Length: 194
Image (cartoon, rainbow, N blue to C red; front, side):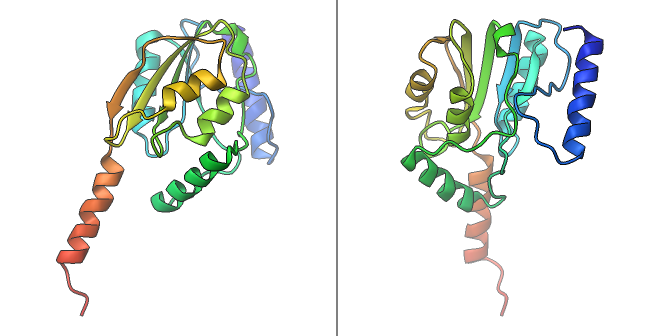
């Protein structure tokens, strides 16, 4: 697809989205790709994984796709943790806002996500279930809060059994948890409201 066609497609999606219509199987790319064979797809709640995705996109001249839910997770960290734990336990796959319509045109897919409860979050399971990764090189890049990747790699392989998984990049990025703990400790031991 040429650059003008991508712009027309993006404008069409934006106008439908502005009208309140959810477009199934549409792709919204943040930037045209210099190498159309590389896709960087990611989910980021706080922005840590997004920073990695932007860097990978620049480094590999790929297309960028942000994985979004039809109904976003709650803003509150602890509420999100509880909801994600319940979804994981029940095997629930949340509905995605959009999918990559032309996933077959990509040879390599960098897939980024944070670790939630020692596993890949339900939104990533939903993303994997919604696409056919047969024969695609899938390169995971993962952020976590200090406890490692848990069983996330086996989850990826289970949900995309025909993908060619490449070595993953893993980085500790626990700023949100540490910030919440630091503020809670300060409130418990510091200022008085009496």
